Image (cartoon, rainbow, N blue to C red; front, side, top):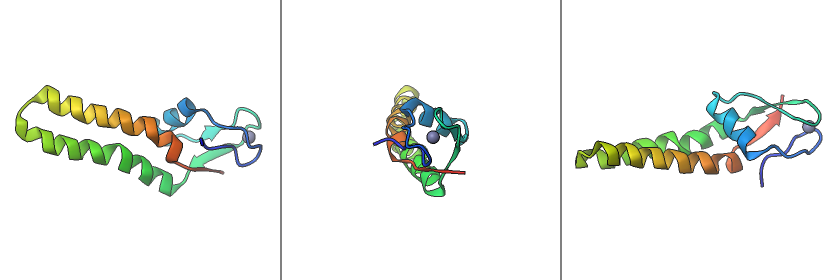
Length: 95
Ligand SMILES: [Zn+2]
């Protein structure tokens, strides 16, 4: 389910991919063969669609309630869920 190395087929870990996403799409080095993988443009788009966009969406709908904790809590919760799912959906290719 998770992305594998294009060269040696070794799977990348969920946390490795998540770290890459949060470090401004930092390239992933395969632990086994050392080849470098960069995120595809579609992967960046997927990540934004799963995290930033829903976060603003939720923030926008919760803001009129004038409950700062609820608004930020809701937005943060969505961000967490998106981040959890994103590593399963984004794709990388060998560079
Ligand atoms: Zn590899």
